[in-house]
Length: 151
Image (cartoon, rainbow, N blue to C red):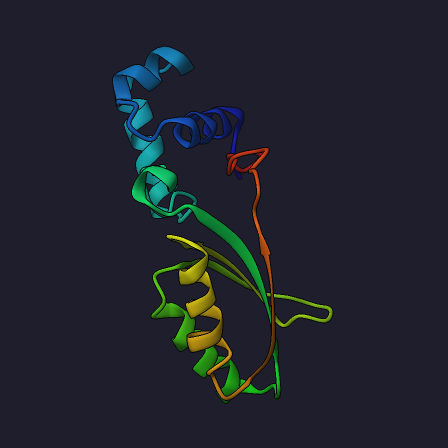
């Protein structure tokens, strides 16, 4: 079980994973060594999976963000594994989910331009033998950036 201090520690790390144990100790009113031990426990328990940096997609030349819904022609373990391997090899696909409803998968993609998105859809996704239909929605403006998880 997480206590209130663990929750506050996780919230602080989601906002800024570069905070030192000393900085965290000042914010949470604990010693740096207590913070370090709690952080190690949260990492060992798998609550903290990784640390990373949030990059600016546009400054990296990735001007188009889109959500792509994929419908499969057939369902089964082999088809799912093949499709999973395909999207794992595509660096433009940054997230993928299986869904209930009409679409089988939802992909979040970043591309340099519309031509690159077109290539991804037509030459990669629709070229896959088990993909029946693809529908894309291009993000015009992201109103809320990817937020920390509610704790």
